[in-house]
Image 1: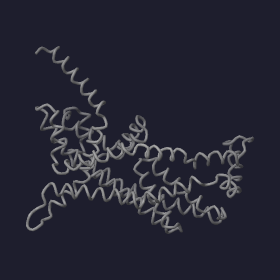
Image 2 (image 1 turned 90 degrees about the horizontal axis):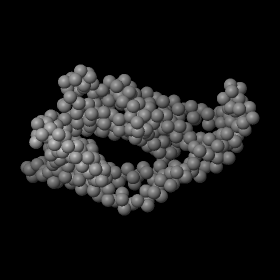
Image 3 (image 1 turned 90 degrees about the vertical axis):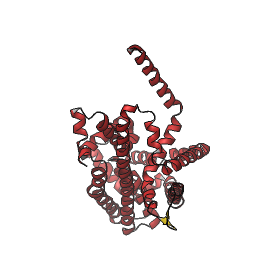
Image 4 (image 1 turned 120 degrees about the horizontal axis):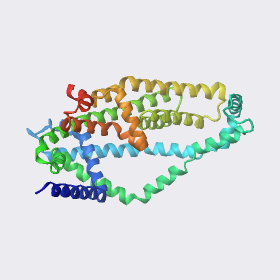
Length: 369
């Protein structure tokens, strides 16, 4: 076979692979999601591997089934206990009368208006009340959220198919830890098989550490903020919702915590409109800000170094630049997926392109672990 024929066949194979990936995109997503969840469930599998029943270790089928059941129970428990609280909180925010907020906060709004006009941040002819009303209306506009819920309900059959498919694939990935790697190795040329195997092992270990650490970070932020909001006087239900939202938003690097603080303060204002602003509400908002800021400090000093430094072995500046570039390319989803994607890329570079100086520099920390 001559060189031109090889290039033609290679090009045709590439086009076929791209078309296959596009046409069966949802199936590929199911497989990847199931693979990631199987990484998360691996510690449970490892724990069950030590269990003996009547002198015999549990078979792979039983371990996989128990792990799937545990993951589903956690998923159901989360939605049954916490999500209804969050839904009620968003509904209460959606039912807020913006004009009532403006009237209750008339004094601080007037002072804010004078300040903005004095420093040229607001036009002299601008009606401060109208401006604040417009901003608050946008803030408490839950119409898009309701549309989203209606869309979810309208696509319940698709969600059911997705969950069933992911669960079915997940079971077999948990039962046979080499199944996913075998699927990947099947499409890798034989001469690169050993490198691909090493890359898959490294990726699995790093991603398991990362996702477990990320889950602990969410739970840590949620617990600290829930305890803090309860301490300053919020009912436990409201404190739990604030903790939940701030914990989940914390997954979004850099801007997520700021959005979470704004959400917590908005809830504080809405729930305490009957308070006198300067002597009661303002101190409460300050306490909230201090508590959530302390939580972020603990997250930055304790949680994140553990997750990023000890799980993906990357320098904080390196992580920051990667997240910044991913955000520019794909917005918030890109920022969320930046670190695991970068981890996968670094491992692949280390195994297949380690002769280049730049690659050696980028993957140096992986060699030192």
